[in-house]
Structures are given as C-alpha cells and as structure tokens.
Length: 440
Image (cartoon, rainbow, N blue to C red; front, side, top):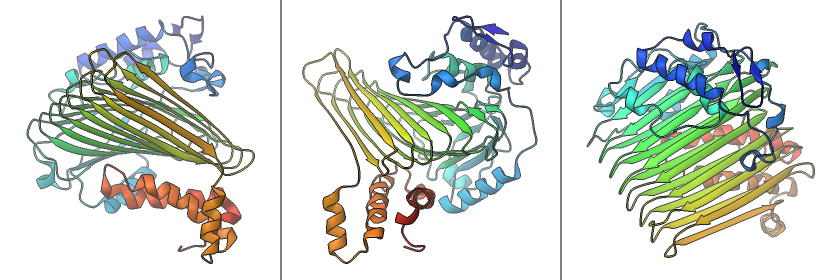
C-alpha cells in the first residue's frame, strides 16, 4: 500500500497489483517508479486553483479497485464496428477493454503506410515515446503511470502521409480504468487519430483516468479527436499533453458528453519556430453533470501560433468550468495566441464558470481572450421566430447550430457525422419539450 503526503493510505491500489501487470521489463520498471511517485504526491483538492469549482474533494480512491483481466465486451465490439462504418476507411483500429488492448487491425493497409501501431512489444520506439510529452503530473496521472496495463502506441516515421485515421475505442466497464495512448509523428509526416471513451452504463460508480500524449516533429501534421460518452455514474479525469516542433501543426478536439464528472486537462506546447496549434473543446451537460475543461497554450519558441475555442451548454442543474491559460515564455517573440470560451446556460438551475488567464513574459506578442456566459440570445430567437419558426423549435435550432459550428471544424472530417448524431441525440434529451422534432 502507499501512504500519500497527506497521510492518506491506499488500500486497493497496491504495489503488488501494479507489479502484477504484464509487459516488457522497461514498462514494469516504469510502473514501479510511477507507484513510488504516487506516495510523493498529495491527492488533488478544491483548494488548488487548477481544481477550483470541482467535486474532487469527494473522490475516495479506496472506493475503487484496479481493473481485472476480463474478457472483451461485446458492446465495445459493436461500438468499434459502428465507428469503423461511420468513419469509412481507417488505417488501423483497436478495441481497448479497461486499458487492455485486443487485436490491432489494419483494415486499409495502403492507407496505413509505414505506420507502427500496437502494444509496447510491437512498436520499436515505445520506451522512448511513453512519458516523453506528459512528464510528471499529479497523483492521478501517476496512478495512470502505475496502473496502465497495456498502453497503445502509434508511431509514424519521417516522410509518411497516413491517408486514413487511426481509431482507438476504449470500453471501460470496470470499477476503474487507466487508458494510456502515445502518438508520435515524424518529421514531415501526417496522421489523424480518433479516440473514443465509452462504457460504464450501469449504476455502479467508476473511475476512468486516461492519459494521451501527442508529439509532432518538425513539419509534421497531427490531428486528434476524442469523444467521451461514458455512463452517467462514471468519473472521467483525463489528461491530454501535446507538443509541436518547428513548422508543425497540432490540432485537437475534445468532446465531452457523458460521465457524472467529466474533466479534460489539455496542455499543448508549441516548442519550435512557426509551430501552430489549434485546441477545440465542446461539452454538453444535463441533469447534475459537471464538465470541467482546463487548457494551457504554452508558447516556448518564436513566431508560434495557438488558437483555442471551447464552447458548450448546460441544462437542468448541470455545471461547467472552463479555466484556460496562455503562457508566453521569454524569447517567444511574435507569438500569436487566441483564447475563446462560449457557454450557453439553458435552464435557471444550470451554471457555468469561465476563468481565462494570461501569463506573458515577452513584449512583441499578440494575445487575446474572450468569454461569454448566458442564455440563448433573444435577438437570435426573435429573428428565427420572425421567419415563421414555432417558438418551441427556435431554441432547439439555435443550440444545435451552436454545436454544429464547432463540430464542423473537427480536425478529422470523417468523424463529423458521428459527432453530430451523438450531440443531437443528447441535446434533444436535454432540451425536453424544446427539442426539435425527429428528423429535423
């Protein structure tokens, strides 16, 4: 067992359970080091700014146990098949059940090129990839280091254009799951990845702690989309870490629809001259859900660009929190960073917090931030109703258009119809009598 800094003892997440996980020697050693690091960390608390406005104080790790090595879930296979059909050709796909990967498939070998896609033993550079972008972290990231049973690796060598997306579906139906994904795109190469987190449809609480690392080398292009549609009793506490080198383009889009508590912390660093990042995030809250989005646009090198757009809606008594930081280091001259957060509050009992921040240590830069929080705009409602649209349909049209605008910017176009369907179905439930009629 581990005793954390504040004298919290972990009884279920033990060193023996971590050591019992399979893998090559370097991965076992890394897990052991991760477990030792857990003991040096304090559990997150709401007193920390990065956890402000969250229910994290109610998290008791001993309420959960490490996932057992169960048989793959048929529901996960069905979702993988549905997504494969929706996306069209994919370069590679895999179903990961509670952090353990099943068979890696290459449905489109021509589109896969020289793509390396598999477990630690399958990808030659895996030991150098894991932890190269997400270095350190809080107690929950360290738990992922210690209990990720089967990290998934995607590695593209220099000069390779992977013509179809890679699809990774995580089916999480155990008490806990620690999915881990590491993506590396070589110099001048291009890749797109779609990652989906689903499962946990029962009434039992579950804890899902995914960590995804994205690395784009000089001149590389990496596009990434994640969709979280876990069951209503789950807690999803995700970490996304991205790094772009000179002249690279790194585009991410995270969509949070499920879980009781849905958190995504996305830290994206542009570390090479003329690197560009785009960070998109969308969420929809209903019932008592809490959606929590934290972002870092980190400018390390000169003439780097980042654009962030986070927008979502809350209905019922749900809540959302957005806190974002633009940080420009000394020497990162002529950096251009934009940060925008839009929140729709659809019911009187719902609430949204928006906290933009700037940390600028250089003079010759251009940075901006903007945020809005409020109900559907009455001028928009009036305009639509004046065109003959029934009042009970007007709000549904406006909110659907609000989400479609950001979904249409998805860095992986093939996933747009699937995202629209998922958002529209949940939006109809959230709006109740204000929803659009079927087929609209």
